[in-house]
Image 1: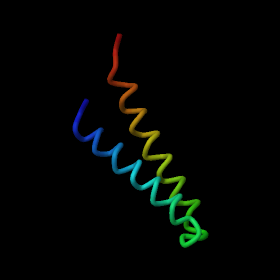
Image 2 (image 1 turned 120 degrees about the vertical axis):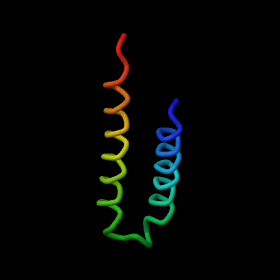
Image 3 (image 1 turned 135 degrees about the horizontal axis):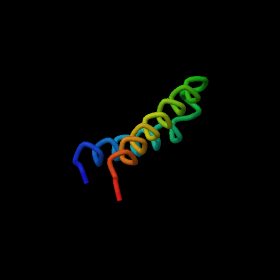
Image 4 (image 1 turned 30 degrees about the vertical axis):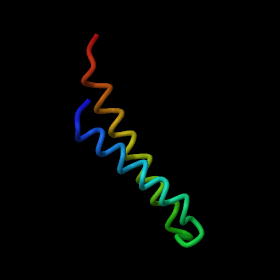
Length: 54
């Protein structure tokens, strides 16, 4: 796997843990942060899907 993809995945998982660990302190910011996180993962999967040709 590409190091950039692994780094992005690791940072995304760490960011997800932070969002859900501090959800009471974040308040209304949790929804835009979560949507941004999901979109980041979607773009990562979309890029991976296009490069695999069988």
